[in-house]
Image (cartoon, rainbow, N blue to C red; front, side):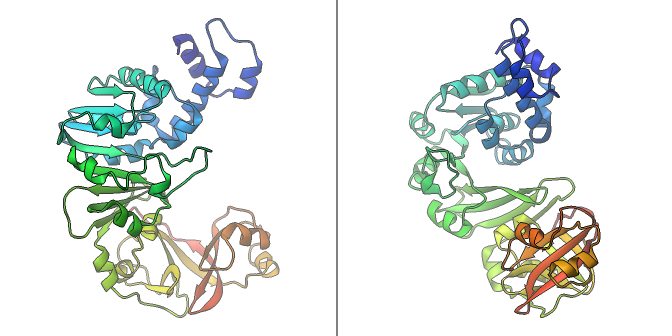
Length: 398
């Protein structure tokens, strides 16, 4: 992409791209490519803020930007490569992960089978000043077979989670490549293997399919579960599950062994008490409920309701949302109008017949405001609660 187009995109980063495309292109400017760069710059502002400083960085098409790791999650994955002499990224894509690996490893091999994407990434690594990244346009597994055994400290693979028709998929066997039969081969070339999976995948089944999983990392950003990472190669008898949230406002880390969780009974409360605790998405995905309740002295509202309750606040910050119960609330539109005359609230449903969005419409509420409507099952009964948020600092390590 020429310098004039890149400069035009930066100068018009706040412009309406649809209107720009209808206009006349200045000399030397490709308006279609400029529009793609403007959209890329907007994505970068929230997803890769560090890239905005690199004026020569060229952003790929939207689908590749969507599939790429965020700056925060890429940096987290780079911690597995720290000190490695050589790292292989077998599904390079936009190159965000490879760039993060290159900051902490001696050498990185970026492998991508799409020629145009590979060429774009190679130019971007040069623009970023990363001289320790080698680019290879090839199928990752085929390229790896040409390397010597034990050549890498870490091999990273992020199978594509889109079908040929563009439909999103989650299970390993539906991804490209399907690595379930290739783990022993991959580990013959590396000390450790790091596999990224869909947040929708079942953790227990994934560990069974991969075999030899030492660590599972459930990564959230700002209360939203973004990635599941499986680290293989150490020969552990049981994986350790690490739950983290990387956003400064939500930051916490919590680690446990599945056997610990299985051996810890869940305490129950038949009724909601003064406070409601909604665990962070990473903990919800990991299925950590008995240990969480035990450590914070909380009771669960129902065996299948993933909300906790207590009559007092814990002595340390809770990894998730904390709400104070204002009063019980009948879940019909008339009662809600009386309690919320402005017609705004955040709706939370857990173990309830309707999803939050559907209940919000049914109650005639708009999203927003300072109050929460919680609809859940407690002690086998449907309950409604009007709540307000309790502000708390980030948790840190638990």
